[in-house]
Length: 210
View 1: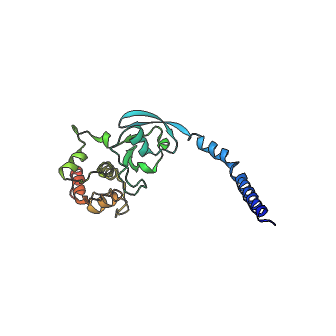
View 2: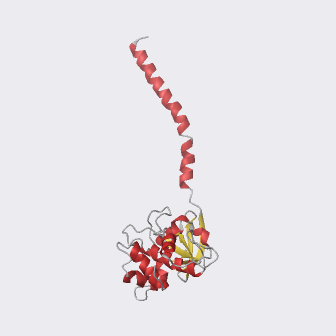
C-alpha cells in the first residue's frame, strides 16, 4: 500500500475511533445537565428559637447548626469539627443539649431551641455566663458558647436525677462530684485547656464544690 494511502487510512481509523467514543459520552450529557439543573428539595419548618417563633424555607439537607448561623444569623453557636466531636455547636432543644451539626433543621418542627444568645446578653448575663467570666473559664472563647449551653443542661440533668455512665448508684439522685462533672462535660472540648476553670464556674452556679 502506498504511503499516502496508509496515512489516509490511519486518519480515518482515528476519526472513526473518536466518533465511537463520543457515542457513549454525548447521550449522557443531557441527563447530567438535567440532574444538575434540578433544585434541591425544599421544606418549610417552624420552631421557637430563644423564645421567638421562626419559620424558614430550607433545603431539606440543612443542619440545625447552619439554619441557626446562616439563616437566622445566630452566630454565637460555633461550627467546629462539624462531626459531633468537639461540642462547639451545642444548643438546648426542649431542655436537652444536642450537637446541632448532627441533626437536620426539618427534624425540629415545633421544638423549643435555646442558643447562647437566648441564655443572656452582655447587659444581663445568665448566671453560668457570669461564672465563666469570673473564673476565666475560657481563653480563645471559640468553644465557650457550647460549653456554657452544655453546663446549663448538665445542672438540669443532675437536678432531674438523670444518671451518667459514672453514677455509682442508679437508685439515688446523682451529685455534682468532680467525676460526674468531667463525665457529663466530656463531649465539650476546650483546646485551650481551661477545664479546671470551667469546672469551678459550674460548681459555683450549682452551689457546690467539685
